[in-house]
Length: 164
Image (tube, helix red, strand yellow):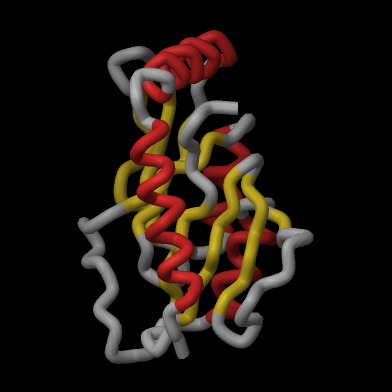
């Protein structure tokens, strides 16, 4: 296991049930076996080794703008995923296009207004990225991981008043 990896990505939502339905039924991301510590406001989903936390923040908490942050999901069949996203009525931002390396991708907005990318990379491209990532992770990130662990412990002890 790399010395550092992504544990979870938090996705802000307005309607927790609508968001969970979209991510589970349209994108095929299953509910995590790990129970949510706040099921009224947070849903845990499993996306490979990384979790997705759908979080219903209070109305006063600012969300990123439509051109703010985005997250990308690697899919096996990009065309089928594109059809499901279109059938779900999502706004497409960037139609299916190819990167300079030939890898196809597209951007859309989920029902909560979050910018999402779906992409597909050939297997050797993924394994090459993983090898480079491991080399990078092995070059001194253990101290960062320790600092992140300390921050997470502090956050776990804090009262989450920003969550509805």
